[in-house]
Every structure is written in C-alpha cells, then in structure tokens.
Length: 166
Image (cartoon, rainbow, N blue to C red):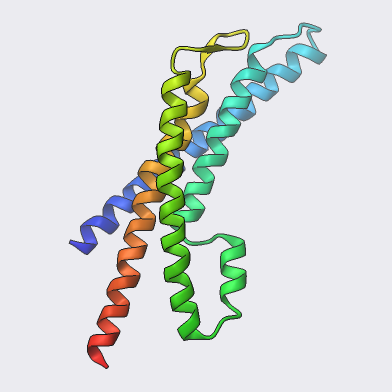
C-alpha cells in the first residue's frame, strides 16, 4: 500500500514538473511577444501582460508544490540541521502537523475564492478570475496536502515502529 501511494505522489510530481515547464516556456514566449511588439513594432498589446501574470502565478505555485513534496524547502532544512536527532524528529512531526492544518485552511479558503471568482472577467481579455485562483486549490489540495499527509503518516509510523522495537 505504501509503495502505491508513493508512486501516485511521484506521478503527481511528474505532472506538476511537466506543467511547470510548460508554464515557464509559455511565459517566456509571452514576454518575448510583448517586448517585440512594444519596442520593435511600436504596438502596445495588452494580452501578453495578462497571460504572463497568470502563467507566473501558476509557475510559482507549481514550483512551490514540487519543492515542498521533495522536502527541499531552504529554511526548514537549514534550521533542522542544528537540532539534536531526537528533537529533530519531534520537531519534524510538529512542523508537518502545523503544515497540514495550514494546507487544509488554504484549501478551504482558496476553494471559496475560486467559487466567487469563476464568473468575474479580469482585464482586457476578460479571462475569468478562476484562472488565477484555481492554482492554490490544485496545489494545496492535490499535491501539497497529499504529500504532507503521506509524510506525516510515515513519520508517525516510524515513531511507532521505533517505540515497538524499544
């Protein structure tokens, strides 16, 4: 069961990496089009800026979810290396629990925001606001919450296994 969950998390991570790269590529192309049209053609287009804003939001949140699922967050790793091993494990359990509560709150609040913005057009292209606000729902709900829940259960299982061996 554990390996199936880990495979599912790895699959979600690979999908996130793919879409993150697509977002970055499209962001680059959108910015190039905006710069070229403004400075070479002397035509100020409004849509490249709007598309770039949305793609930047998607790329940042997807990148955050990828780093989070790999447990490569800079501050967390930096501070944990100074703690003794017993305190480090307990601290990791406390941090994972706090993150779990935060992600649940983020998921609930972002779903509410998504629902209120679904029909409200934004900007010149009248892109629905849900385009901008769907990413926290996806990353906090699917990726980060699943990954964190798996890590939290794994840590609790490791602690219970060590107590059983003692």
